[in-house]
Amino acid sequence: METTLTIIPKLTRRSFFRIGSASVSCLYLLPMVRPLNVRASEKAKLLGSAEYCIFLFLQGGASQIDTFDFKEGKWTPPEFDLRTIKGGPLKLPYGLFPRLAEKMDQIALVRSVAAWESAHPRAQYYLQVAHPISPARVNEMPSIGAVIAYEMKARRKEGDFLPPFVCMNYGAGGGAGIVGSGCLDAQCSPWTIETESGVDIGLSDAERQRYDRRWSLLNRLEQGARSAEGLGGNASYELHSHYQSAHSMITARGIRETLQLNEEERKTYGASALGDACILARNLLAAEAGTRYVFISHNGWDHHKDIYEKNGPLYSRCSELDPALSHLLTDLGRLRCRDGSTSLLEKTLVVCMGEFGRTVGELMTGRRGRDHLRDASTTLFVGGGVKGGRIIGATDDTGGRVVDPGWNKQRSIYIEDVAATMYSALGIDYTKKITNTPSGRAFEYLELFSGTTFLGPSEIEPLFS
Picture 1 (tube, rainbow, N blue to C red):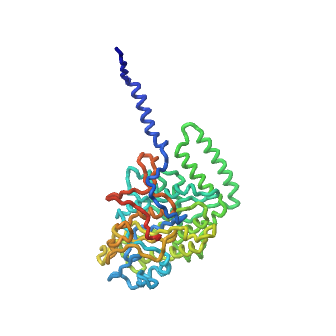
Picture 2 (tube, helix red, strand yellow):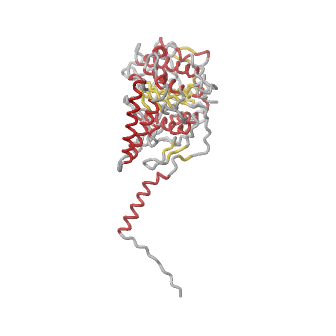
Picture 3 (cartoon, helix red, strand yellow):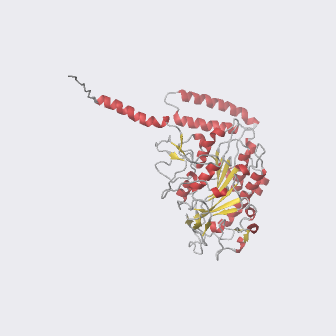
């Protein structure tokens, strides 16, 4: 008779804690062995029509019916000077946008844009990240600009000294604040500039020798700190990364010329914070030295009060936007890329929008302004392969509801679709996801679902066909 020996495993208390601690440690370290990027789909066909992107944010939410989806009514001041542009169906308040009216053959207007949120902080966060705000994940979610910076790493050339992501004039201002690199490398964070404070970096010959001595000393001190037990880690790495980026920029030849603001040019661009930001954006891209995405905020479009007051808030915002954006487009079209084959505008996608629209009709707030409206707004697209002189989508007679989406999705266009368009134009696969996050939950560049429905975001194809 054959005897079978049965081994019964014994788990002592000491073994339990030893195995348990190893399991927990391995689970915690698991994200470190995961691939950083995972392709979620092989179906994305990318446009690849641009190398750069400028996002001009009308912070506060412009009134679509008073700007680029104009609806004339009893409320319309006569000085708006409504005109039909270049014999086409497009009507604009020429009195507000005399220069941009001459550029409409280059600009595509998308009038079927809607937003998920109608409160500034949440809507502005959504605009920067193309994801709803999640308190549990807010620190690990990278902005669109950070994702672009991360994806553009492989395209950086030796000698590139400018940061890939630049953000100008976006203070807190009651909104969400600047969204940075999240779970991505610190070098994907935005370089923030406030043009009203001036931009003065770079070294004179007199300063260079002293700076070199201090830089050498800093490197020796950092090297000692990193080698000391218990010091260093992620915080030390991030500081070192920022130092290196700043050093490359400060010591680069031509940095002062790139960031210089000529007084005559300032007047041409409107002599405003927005105009200065547009000049700097032009210079940063023309340098072809590493900057790929520029986020510019034009503050002050939240017009709850006295929107039509003579020389009031709407007039002042338009009087700054009109010269700044029109001259930016002129200069980008005039400048040639370094290879000489195309203009800078052909390689730069320019997007201009607010976080939502404004309420419509004659019934306004008690303070004669317009409140927030998430159902309809207008976005401008120019350059980077966009076919200008066209209107995509339509709203009803009041301008408050989308009645014709104007594209194959047969629904309103959301920030996810705008982001997909930007990513695709830059040759970035927007179906990717990042799995190595602090929470262990994947960050998808764009999610298939919104907060309420299946969305399936994609680039806005009629812009390019």
